[in-house]
Length: 129
Image (spheres, rainbow, N blue to C red):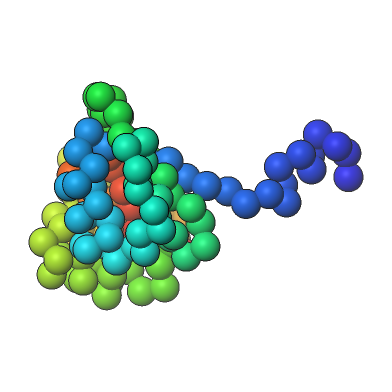
């Protein structure tokens, strides 16, 4: 194995997402999505997402992007989608994509994907492979 291929290959990954309103983000990620809040300060909220550190970073402005910034691999996308809807999370619908009644899209490779937004408009997803 060459050194260039192993620099970060064995290191733990952490994820970042931005928020303008940490209190609202804390309620969403902790109370709605059920992530464990590890710590918080004026820089970020830190959550444990099944062993991955998620830093919800406080920023002055969240840049709008038209792609997924954070996603979860789930075992049962139908059950997860219904649970999100019960928690008042709206699954996104996209023009030109064939999504089922819940908003789940079947990708050409066989994965099933649904998208939703956090309070800052960041696009999040759930995927069943």
